[in-house]
Image 1 (cartoon, rainbow, N blue to C red):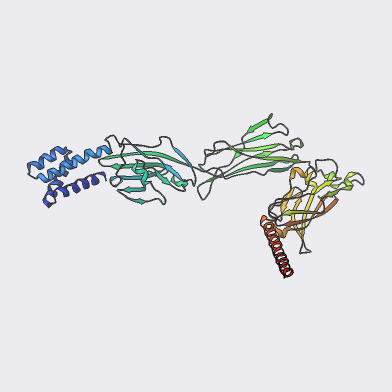
Image 2: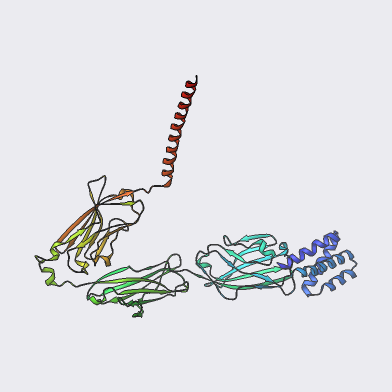
Length: 477
């Protein structure tokens, strides 16, 4: 491409000096001799002078002179600088792959005689694909959105800009720059990564004493595939003094449709009552992370129920006979879209902690405009059931006798009478509370009321002033 640009430049100067057609024949002949036999320009000029074509000689001389002038713009030691280390970027990021010219002089480059080509060879292919082409003021995007800045190119910056980079676009990029008679190129490595989007581990894990339980931690949507998952065990009250680190049984990564991966690590628990309150942390290390990610779960161990306990009758007297549910007042007023906690405290069940596998909890709602009782949330034998999205109770607080209901983004139609019904063995208690959901008042309404009052006062004042003035005039007459 650079030979074509140089050839075109010489022909243009020849037309200025000698427009005769046969001069072009000798010019092309000399050009061929120079290109074929690598002779100097002086040899070509001498040959044409011997043949008597002095206008063509003059054109060639001017071409060589312009070539020397072009050397003021681009020296013979033209080089391209790119990042030597591999460039690591995140999925869907807008990136720039640097390609900067050096030793091209101090004046702005003439971009009408410059050619720039960008190529990509992916990690799983030996073939190069063209990404972007710039040739003397015209450009072609072979990859949607690929571009170089024209203002930057005048300063010698041929860097490539790629929006929303994808996983399959990682590999070796080659930048080729042609400024006649120079042609330089260099390559740079681009690595794509995707941070894990989520760590799937429940915040609380309810298990039974001496019953094996498999605890799992799943890491989703990461790239590349290698990932390192470890576990940490923190004993209750010993967060900084006793931490045990170990590896679980990791499964093979599963490839998603978008090219990312999921991986799961697990291990088997054999809990005892002394393990209650133990914290297990899932720690994830990956190339895309500067520091490892981690997620924690609190182990809640419930006592095993023996056959004798299952068939035993409840005591006839004592605190357990007087199970009570205490609600926070009779009416609770909350704002629209607020996160709400409806209190339900248990008493008379004995000393904590409660064995939550023996507890049944039912939250129901009777709306303001209906007599029908609707289920909101249930907890039965350690298993929660959500009838209303994101309705929940805290397992750790339940062991302390707190069965309060948590509702996020409360709506107007969710106002009404809420009932908390609790059953422990054969003892049952319930409580009700009314929840009023109101729209928050805006400052605009207060301003409108204030302005309306001002207008009314103004009208009254004007009427009274006009009447007083009329009476004054009549009295003077």
